[in-house]
Amino acid sequence: MAKHALSKEENIILRVTGCPNGCGRAMLAEIGLVGKAPGRYNLHLGGNRNGTRIPKMYKENITDTQILQEIDELVGRWASERLDGEGFGDFTIRAGIIEEVIISKRDFYA
Image (cartoon, rainbow, N blue to C red):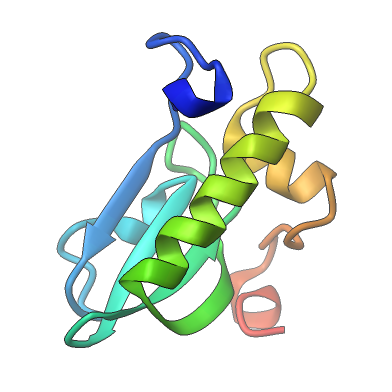
């Protein structure tokens, strides 16, 4: 966050779970990481800060190195392109990075 000149008050809700069971509540975060295999995760984006919007899969089965690269690039974009008070998850939808999940049965895998 400091790399992109973001203050300590500006945060992103990121949650990680080691498997699809979801004990880490990754599907209630702006950025969610769900384990697929040792060292590999699905990267989900677009949840909101309240945990009331499901994030959508952005990248599937990526390595920890790829995760760090993706998040670094996305946080950089958020830092420079966001609207006043706009959360990271809201930004990813507005910027067209990910489509909002409105009806999970229809939109989650679309």
